[in-house]
Length: 361
Image (cartoon, rainbow, N blue to C red; front, side, top):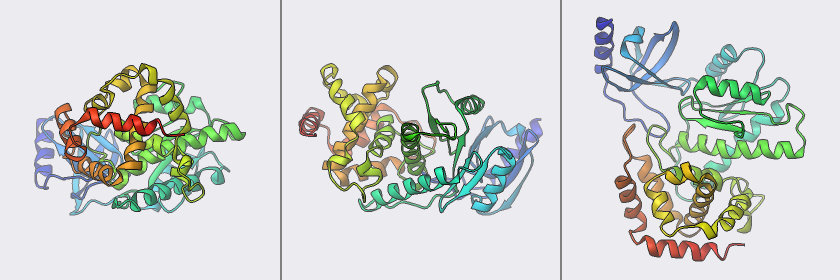
């Protein structure tokens, strides 16, 4: 066992340590076996106690070096699976209970016979998100892997898989994006017979989670780095508004308002404490103690920044996407990154924010 650990570290040590961007990595390509299953990919970080390995399907694998067997180098450059390669992997892993539909950027696994309900909607969301940021001067990278979404037939199947993945969700969650698997998991609320209201809930789940997935795979966020929760969820909730996820059909300014989050923001205004913005910037505690308010604040503050300070907001996102991978992001560092772009006068910033939100209708 000690020899196996040493050998693995020596193999990895021959490769320059990978500095991964938000979308992927460009280290050497390895193959190895874990628990009898073969994996291909590249090591992002390693030590005598842990290896963090990016597989060619986009998953992150963590393991003790001694657990790896039959490892060898395949090439000098990591590359993700092609769409056809990953489609074969998904078909093998998911079995005949799923049909797999492909678009330009997505592979969507869903119950048989439902291709028209799912795949193009995910692709449309990707293109909408890419367009939204490109016209605002944010240079997006192409994803290094095909983006994967798995639509389960019902809630029971969905929750069983979530537990198997170690996802900490409850029965109120309709879907989620996992940065470990790089996949969206969700279920068809209507069980294949969705009415208009069911499909509206399906669509809202797709919009929010596909925004997260797109952001983490195009360099808007850094998948292998920490980001303030308000930034991640603020962007996800921003895209829930028709004027953002489908701006061509909904070009007016009012259509860019997320009505549900806006109503929450107004309803919770009487409970709002001064200094809320500074707290969001430096820590994520509000999401743990008062989730509804946290999501409403994250949406409102993101909406205000995008509407009034789009270039600064883009610069701020870029500064976080450039942070070192797997590095801690302390409150002090979060504060420093924010104030470099938006200034340190939080009292003035919050006053301007609240004054603007009072004009939103």
